Length: 100
Image (cartoon, rainbow, N blue to C red; front, side):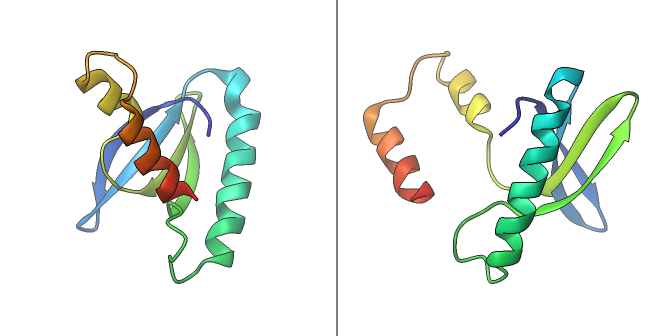
């Protein structure tokens, strides 16, 4: 996915994750990410594949914002909580199993 800061927002009693892409050079990658995740969401309407649900995108103050369902902590937040150390191998294996 595209590098960006993720913030939490709420609307209509639901929580969302908004990925904010500040750097204009990453905008094309963000559009590609939106296209790929949208296609995967259409192929997996029942949510069995564990793909994050893409909601919409918008521009705000020259930043590109992508709205997703709110899941858990971002990988960056977990790394930060771990003192910026690498992941133990059992975490990497757990994440790999979820992705595959």
